Image (cartoon, rainbow, N blue to C red; front, top):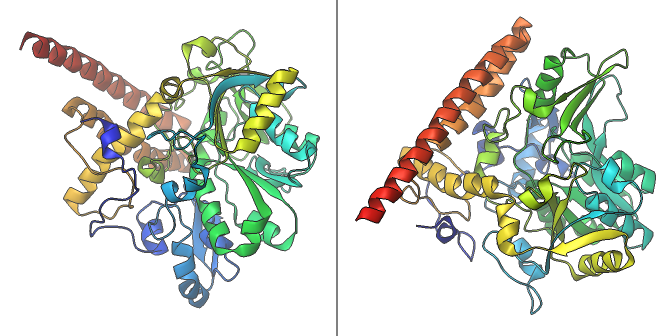
Amino acid sequence: MSADNLVSQSAHQSEPGNLLKSINDVVKGGFCVGCGGCASLAESGREMQLNDLGLYQPEVTDRDRAEISDQAARRICPFLGEGPHEDELASRFGGPDAQPDRKLGWYRGLHAGYATSGNWRQNGSSGGLTSWILSELLSAGLVDGIIQVRENLTDRSRPGFEFCISRMQADLSASAKTRYYPIELSQVVKFVRENPGRYAFVGVPCFNKALQRIARQDEIVGERLKFFVAIICGHLKSSRFGESLAWQLGVKPGEARAINFRHKIAGRPANGYGFSATNELGETRVAPMSTLAGHDWGLGMFRLKACDYCDDVVGETADVSFGDAWLPKFSADSDGTNIVIVRNPIIEKILQKGAKGGAIALEPLSAADMVKSQDASYRHRRDGLAYRLYLDDRAKRLRPLKRVQPSSSHIDFSQKMIFRFRSAVSRKSHLIYLLARQKHDISLYVDFVVKATRTNNRLKRFDRIFKRLKAKFAKRS
């Protein structure tokens, strides 16, 4: 059975009895993504706090208020099924000039490209098109501000990131890089509620979903949020990911003052980027990301458990989605190239005008190439998710309601072994690193990663051999 056949076209097809029912279920079950949606309510009774594992979680500050606001909060949380799901939120993009796709959602244009004007490409993580389109929205007067992530400027004694409002080109440049770091949006929702204006929001798919659910409930927020921009996301990390990389460069926990997860290295392919950390003395240390323990995205060190239960790879609810063009045709270019999925006709017109005027380079992509560029994510969040839901239902464990249907028959047992191993490793990585911090010994974590990598490679080799043998015997029969 194809994984595509496991995805409902009309969203959720069945509701088993072991579904998450409350914010408390989400937090206790480890499914909280730390978005801060539940804490953004005016009388939420909750406040977002970083826990010992480096993850944002809602802490109850007023139990009575939290109980009163729980119904509204349940309709906001992206991992509870009470609010509108991705298909419903994205239905506004349907129309005669739009195409539906099981993996990409609705789209009007599929492109690969990069910015040729200004320094957007040089300053960005990939091709610079995300910052370029945001700049165009500002300069055209379509928005008054951009809600996006940039380095924490309120406490420079620690590396960190937060949602901020960008109103000028310089603000956009400061926010151009990729941030593999936990953030939450409760304070920026409060800002939007209290400050009239037109805003565009930039965030990962689950944050887009949460904020659009807020906009459905809050008339003021809904009126002021004009555009939603999605950053295609492999998965979210805890704050310990960046800290562990810096520690391997000799910058110990608490000593880093700046970190850069996507340090471009001239002459290396786009996927050969580096990591840099700046210490208290202002010294910056750089290493290719591939040389650091925990860099393997598929292995999932510090991955949030919630990310194992996400089925929106490309941000289907957003007006436009941007990602990295992980395709052979583009990967060799060290400057980086974006893939772009356009759903809003206004965004498509801006892109076409920019390409015609030479401000950006743009070429069409097929839906197949677009999916191929994110192939690993689709395997994990369609094939792997269906299997994880099956395991949860069999064990009667609480889990979210998803568009993907539970299944065990669609993948080979060798692939099942890989999925189970990686989920176990990613969850254990949080605890192993916490122990390493307590004992002031990074080698405990590095040794864990080395052993996990060896096992993961053995499992992948076994999977390849098994598939070859299976194909060989199928051909004979």
